[in-house]
Amino acid sequence: MSNLAAGDAQLFEDNFTVTAYDQSKYDRVARIGATSTDNQTQMQLDINIELFPVRIGSNLEVVLATSLSLDGTKDEEEEKGWRHVRGESNLADMYDYVCHGKIYKFEDGVDGQTIRAYISFGGLLMMLEGPYKKLTPLRVDYTYLLVKK
Image (cartoon, rainbow, N blue to C red):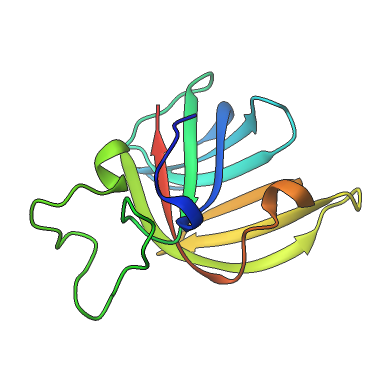
């Protein structure tokens, strides 16, 4: 895992191995299933495979952050979008696949020891299930998803 200077902006970071791949519903989107390297967290993610092709066995570094700014300052969405950075480096430069979306729902896991977080990135969905301790920083709010191999 990388040591990012994003400080408080980084809500979640983990490494995953892709364990399932389903492209049966759409031509350019696959739903992948993945397990964290410590086997504590499960992820399902709809991913645009034209932009970021993956296969079973791929290793992914996944980060959720509230800002793309390297110093962790909150993005001022009224003044500039994520693409309007004019020469400034940001977290998106370090990753291969970046989406903006909203954490919209939480549920208790099946065993009572875990929690599920649901996130939508313009209709591409993500579900994270893991221990409360790992997912505690997540809250209903806007977030960036950053992924690299």
